[in-house]
Image 1 (cartoon, rainbow, N blue to C red):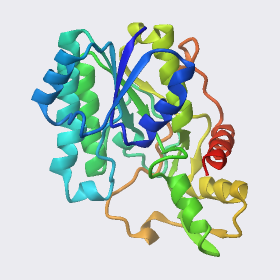
Image 2 (image 1 turned 90 degrees about the vertical axis):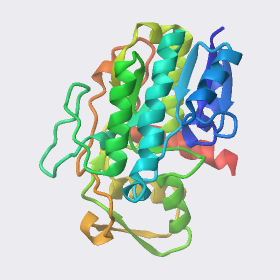
Image 3 (image 1 turned 120 degrees about the vertical axis):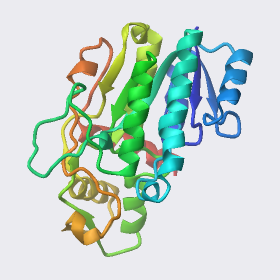
Image 4 (image 1 turned 45 degrees about the horizontal axis):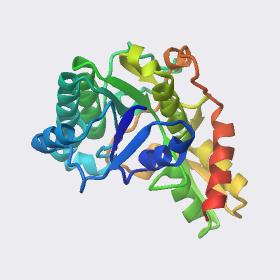
Length: 288
């Protein structure tokens, strides 16, 4: 039975892995920053010397896209430098590392409509994107696996679905941007597929970068309308532009990812984002 360490234990993806793991076998340990600060190289060395680990799933990250504009050094310490050291140490110890990255490593101009493949050159336009791109490069250099995903949401933590649900329950009208296009992705579905890759042993043949999202694509506006409708809120969703929101960090106008590489692996199941949203809302209703 493989021993799996999940960093960033307080985040939504770690919580999703915690939720699904019992169905897939494996000995999972969840480490928060209090248990293991991945920015502390000596702490990583000590932890891995004291604990037998076969696989590390690194979900720890600095994810505040706006905040990274003022704190790029801090974001780089977590998303870039810490990922590099975790990958370097994992490679030396023969541990498989799965590192989570983001579609924000791409610039996504307004006219592009071709999904990004793993071999497309990254071109981040925000501090957050730059730090995640640095982490990707370091992990690949040291033999780790990068799972690049997008627009994650779940019943836990802080995410778009929960934010929209909260404000739609409090207001008669909300505005959501309709000029950014990507793919809403269930953290639960991602967690299930990660657990499948580990349980089947498929990760032993994997290397480099894999794009993973749910199927299809959407604007944030469309995603918000689906959330409001399915949760039964009496709230009108109005479209607006990114420029109207006056956000400091630039976002890609188009960041849909091509998932053919990950879909070629036996056991991986990619569902349309609308179907995954139904699953997550059903789970959320049970949690409430």
